[in-house]
Length: 68
Length: 237
Length: 246
Image (cartoon, rainbow over all chains, first blue to last red; front, side, top):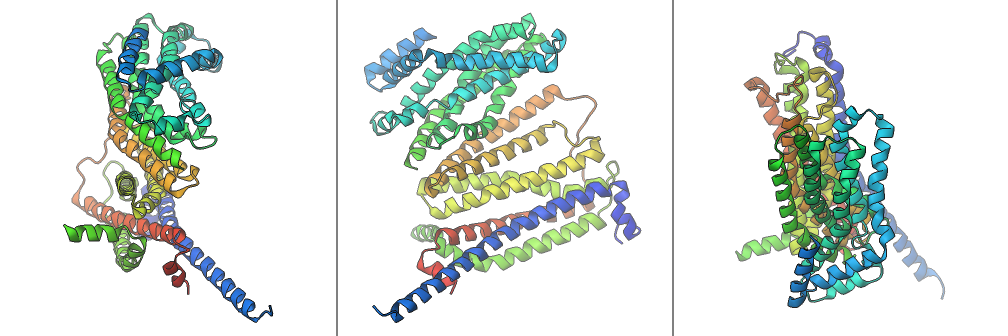
């Protein structure tokens, strides 16, 4: 497998495994969080808008039906 | 220094830039609140007392740390006092007057900064040998300490003014001000503390002091304009 | 020239940017994913290990690109801030606001990976090395801009104040770097000698190049995503955003 003899060798990283994997783990989680955060925010805003619109529509319908 | 200041404000008043008027006004206000004026100084000495209590009274160790400690203390004292640079003016509405005043704002800001330095930076500088004695700073360091602090505290006042202007309209802006300004203070601290260390080690500190002077000149060039711009921005919000 | 102004003006319209950038996103995402994915596998699995540092040197493949983008990101933020300040362009304000947390996160990644890399290489997590210290100061500068951004209630004031601070920071960054550098050579400890990349082997360097390019694409992608979310948030009462959610 590439430069390493076996998968176990790859994981061990010549004894530097904990350092390499913690560095990569934390960094990739930060990168992932950076991408997911704005996507989640966009979804939340759109969902809120939809709810608001539905409320407005129901309010308008009720306003038309209610006897004045 | 006071005599130069006097001369400047007389000539400035003659041109009617408002520089002298602001300078005299701020100095008068500071003089009427003498108690407040002493606060940064008391802070400076008190923290200087904390260090031996924390590190131990060993003169050898203290003399090694003295240059750095005094400079950090001076920086913190300057930082604590810069918060008030525009604050009282903001609260009583006179800052608004300055902003609508037809005189160039950066000049008025420069006058306020100069006044601030005269009532905080200069006393700190003059007082620093006492702190040097308390922390057993070697005799060779005193001249450079005073000279460096004179240049350095002026630069600190100028840089701090930008932060003070940016945070003037924010309630409880004091802590925020420190966060903003401290990274900008670092070059001054580095060269200031190093100059004293060089002098103590018997190396000529003139080059380092020259860099400190250059930093002062650079902030003199930049800070009044940046602070004036920041005041305009902060005031609209 | 006239067409340039037209383009510039349209660029400033958040709606135009939102619609246009939606088409760029898949390409950017694909580029970032492919470049970073290839670079990662190449760097982790196929690149030879460093003769002196062993396999811990593989951390370089995220450390250096993150540090690159952290610094470049500050200039992106400052330039966007300047454009917003001078031409009062709302879109630039939003780009600037989005760039600050992104840059801070990348600075954190660079610092964290540097610390973890330091342990097996120099035997300690933290050294007051010139570059590490400068990186830490850069993080402080980012945090300052973010704190100021959040302190104001008015969006316009927040944008202008933090843009001004970012510009002052930009002027200061070279001075800070130079002085930290000078400070470090003055105090350089004799026992620890830090050499960055002593003549990298091409097999090691090529994946690094891929990773740097990938990080650029990633940076652009996240910046645009953040800006789009910010646009939606600020323009949520306008007709075009309202019609988006229908």
